[in-house]
Amino acid sequence: MLNVQEVRTDFPILSIEAHPGVPLIYLDSAATSQKPSVVVDAMNAFYRSYNSNVHRGIHRLSEDATTGYETARRKVQAFINAESAESIVYTRNTTEAINLVAYSWARTQLQPGDELLITAMEHHANIVPWQLISDMTGATLRHVPFRSDGTLDMAKLPELLSDKTKLFAFTAVSNVFGTINPVRELVDAAHAVGALALVDAAQAVPHMPVDVQAWDCDFMAFSAHKMCGPTGIGILYGKGELLESMPPFMGGGDMIRRVGLDKSTWADLPHKFEAGTPAIAEAIGLGAAVDYLTGLGMENVHAHEQFIVNYAVEALSDVPGLTILGPGASQRAGVAAFTLNGAHPHDIAQLLDEDGIAVRAGHHCAMPLHQICGINATARASFYVHTTTEEVDKLVAGLHRVRRVFRLE
Ligand code: PMP
Image (cartoon, rainbow, N blue to C red; front, side):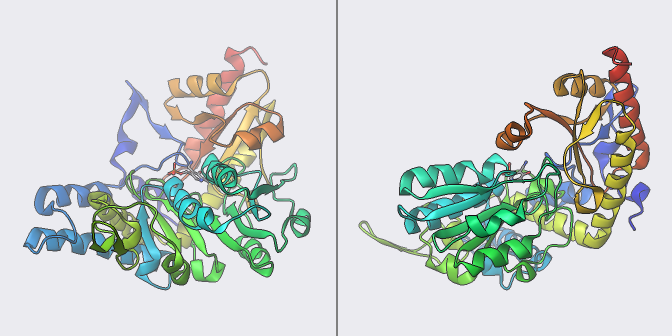
């Protein structure tokens, strides 16, 4: 298990006050995680002592920068057990990683009559790119529905997957329900009809051990900023032969082998997909985040979140009029989105903020999910390695205050 009090000292921001005299209780890690000192320090060290562009220089600083940038790639490779560092493509975030596959693979492969499959619980980042591609190619976009408990309706899979399906793109963990989906089963179902499988792991890689070879997915996308790393960098994992077969997503410097005025050839993987000066400090920060999480142990991270989310689901259930979306704690990652009869989620978030409690309110970039549930918005508390049961107790006390303010008692 994690020593949470020790972990908390790794995150300088946790000792600030949200308002004068009111300590911060950060329950918004699903939107973005806080950063431990080691990550901030690694990025500072880069800018202070070896800031330089990568790959193009033969001077010492450039070599050091390149080493930092490429070492981080190998750390990510080991972290998700990818077969090679060439399978790890730096992007800006999960969104860009999914768009890379959409534009480079799907746009060039799909035609009318083909089908793309997603689920009804996706984040907009795993919906909108496929809508754009379906408009461009004439391919049909279909979705797997979810049941009232926020789990996928697996019984519908056989009628949705067929030899027309070319790609099944789904989230490993819902950012609203918290549902942990059966990734390997979904990947196998896609492969059984000859489709590729793309996993949106934005809410999985930061929170549990992830092994791309055990999942056997063809593509996987995630963001550094949700796993203790900086904003501005994300990862696309892709199987080598697939990435090899795909045309570049963007053109420019660093992604070429030779450029002529009429025609050019491409650099080897993964550089073919990394046009222009990349996010170097951010890659180094991501490498430090991977080291940090590896040091904690992803089994321990997951176990702690399971413990906290169990505690939270039980404690929140005591608040009259409160409904938590999603499945029971055993199938749920560290996310609890809820509604409270008589109080709008935005008002809930604003009142909780007065108590120093940061939660998110809205549709959490999952409008279709909310529409299907018949609600416009939810309030969402999300947990991470530093969350304590005392913080959850304060959330519950804050919600009782919301009920008093709105005279719901
Ligand atoms: N997918 C899921 C499941 C997410 O939770 C998020 C972030 N909220 C994204 C994709 C998009 O991540 P980013 O904004 O870092 O691209």
